[in-house]
Image (cartoon, rainbow, N blue to C red; front, side, top):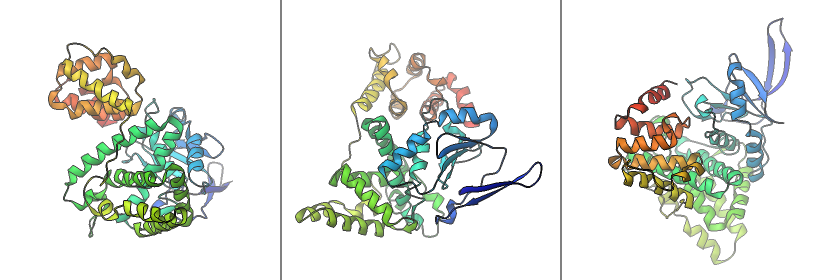
Length: 394
């Protein structure tokens, strides 16, 4: 369960009794218990995985970098206060990618695909150990305090381990999903803002990428005002000040303003404080009020390659198609997002050419599948039918 195991004793020949204890205050929604035919395997001095015995080797191999992820997050933020960290991979019926119960992250088996392309989910849930679990939003209108901070920390960890460009491309993809969700709600809907007005509505109805991505973008912009090193200091100050508390954006803003006063002098204080238009960031159902460019040389290459395939119409492959072999999971996602966004210009001949070059229909990456398979189905591309059926039935 979401507590540290303190003792195990035999009840009889077939049953044991386990005792658990958590001395850290947590909101009730973060308490969790998992029961079943399960096995635990340690993956480091304080990390491990739980899953069904038949799946353990596969799961453990996919998540074998968890200790590095936890150590890196801790080095960026503050000391990890929870003791151990465990991911339990649940059956396919679990309806979310992950849930950040303290010490016991619940994860969907869809993150275990064989190519480690979904390990970012584990990075996100680990980051929740600080923002969401230790410092928690007081109400669901301030949900972005949980998710925006966690996405920001997740991408810091990704950048530290895989390079700044990797994290930038994640942000670029996030901006695309943010815009899609805002358009789904409508740009006149409070649910497209960082501070949705629920007025008795279920918080589930306001759940989208908006608090994740626009929250991240606000913090990204704040960081740009003071620099990466100083903003890291701000995050650490914020986490330590509100540890084991539930807060709102009001407390965050007051902490930011006091921190700026403590670290800058004279006119620079007003310059920094005045640069953040909190009213627009929080309450306007629109994109960030400042221009944020997350593109990289490689992300532009991914877009360019996809557009070249469209321009050639399936008659031949681009001369630089081997560039695709250098693409990580995020860049592949940008490639297929570009095809999907240009759907009106894509033909079956183009799909055949791309599939022949890259065996896309057999790619296990769910981010690729989510873009390639709908595109294939919309054009009645037969090789997409069986993989699509398998994907939605898993």
